[in-house]
Length: 356
Image 1 (tube, rainbow, N blue to C red):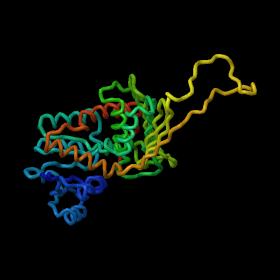
Image 2 (image 1 turned 135 degrees about the vertical axis):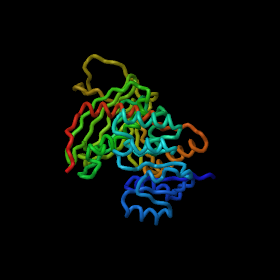
Image 3 (image 1 turned 90 degrees about the vertical axis):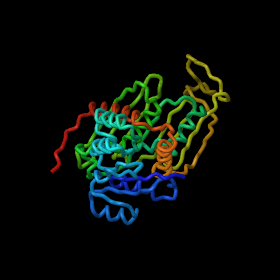
Image 4 (image 1 turned 180 degrees about the vertical axis):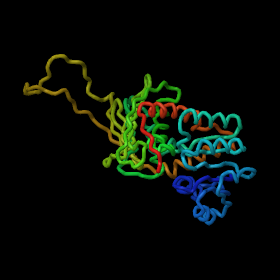
């Protein structure tokens, strides 16, 4: 099997501990890391020891190399756009970490650069392949739960943050950092061609920066269910990633398991509208209720967003570069995501803090 040569820009939590972790794993049979870029000398030394590869302090030192098949851009979020455009102009295929850009306009500039260069461009939206997400879509599509009415998505927990991802000047905040995962999933559910309506509320609660650590985002489209996305650092009791309200039952999904319960409308008691008061057998007032026969299912999931999903994502990239296969995740879909993000930002203008 042909292996592709990789260069990774950045050896932080994403470049080393997500992308790098996959490339170091036994699951990786398609890629070789031959170069790593990081401005911090300590990280370069460690990368050279771990990868036995070339290391550079500046990504521009990659220019002129013809043995690199793909560059993974895991630089600081506010650097993603300029570095990605520069790489494309110099003839590299690029996978860019999220957030892809600061806003729709910047996102469009990157996509335009890719079109002009003729090189492959993609955004690391690996959560599209998360086992909990693909399995819940499979269950919903089976029809056993009936029509989905509401998807509640919660990427929440409790915590205080004071790092660079809390700073607007570095494209920080929950919407741009955590948000691309549930927003990509949500827009995929509604349809990337749908006319999506957005209501949102942002707040700064336990952050030491100037960007939001709480976001409530309500999305819907004509003929589609409502999608309620919550990104909160104020929820110490979060018990699910997905809670799906459906016509015949409900589904709850976590990272490691899915539970769902439903009734069969074909075997349920037949009912019709009654306008007269309801009585019990004793002729006392009765509440309108019935006993439905529930079926309950439990599914344990293998893999997470940080292993199985990453492997499937890079299988997609490999199949595109080697076999010319069309990709399920595209930059044009991320353009739609940034239309939503720009609406959220416009609905919730936040004061910008100047870093000391």
